[in-house]
Image (tube, rainbow, N blue to C red; front, side, top):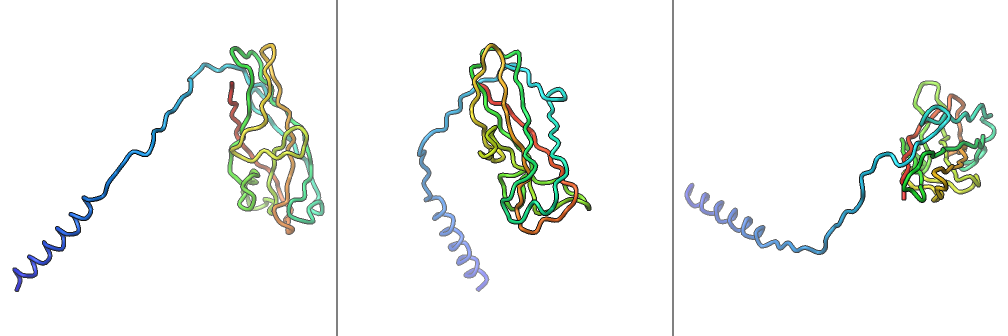
Length: 177
């Protein structure tokens, strides 16, 4: 009986493995990657070297009656100088995204941190949101320089906004053409 159980086990295993070997694989296409590694084609100038500090200030909790309400619109700029072999550029912002609205920057955590609010970065018109991990509009580089103008705002992600510190951070990347 032991031998017959063993033969059945081997037969079942052989059947399973023979079925696996009948899987077919075919190439459906190719991925081709193109690009170029360059020296820094431009120098990025912020208010502190390549860093930019945007002071959104103090905003009353009552400024946010509903999700989507915005406050503290503050303009800031990124400048490119000493550009060579560049005709245009775009900026993307990366960072921890708000749990409710992934397009917004998450506020820094802490016992005294505000809740129900994120930070949005907009094109210069103040109404076109640049979602995190997306590129800004393209800006022409002329005579070796360019300037990106943006607006940052607090954006309510809930009608229940809790007062507290409302700091956040993001990194930015410049893509050159």
